[in-house]
Amino acid sequence: LLTKPPSSTESDSKAARVTLTSQGFIESLVEMLTTITSPSAPSLVATQALRCLCAMIEGSEENKNRLSDLMTARENGGSHHRHQHHQFHANQEVSVIPALHRVLLRSLYSESVAESTAGCEVIRAFCQGNSEGQSALASTIFFEEPSVG
Image (tube, rainbow, N blue to C red):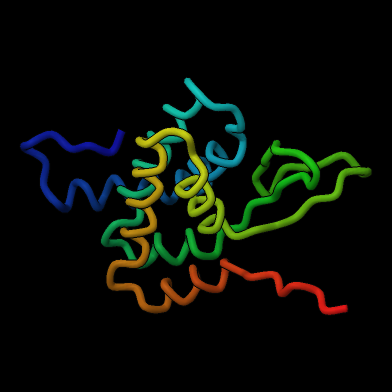
């Protein structure tokens, strides 16, 4: 999707990235990642979504910030994930987590080596030359203190 032919220029690539960003492509990629819940064939879709996400943020401070600000929602008590703008049934409890945390979880827990590697590439692209982004990513990782008592 975001691969460029040998004759394309860097400005063509940047123009395509700007156009895709303005059309909500980053949000659509995150949507795909949060709605894919089963292994096998959907893992191929998740891998491609992660690769495209990497291409969208690599070298683009604006897109790194956009991804950093994006949140996703998950129904508690289940593995079905949805993007923040989707509505849930009134009785469902929903937790909201940063999209970067979602990418990190896919990287760590995917049974697919390709998906895990693609997730790691997103994290690498996000962190490269982005000290504020590194802090933002670190803030999505939390440790629950054991209860004393």
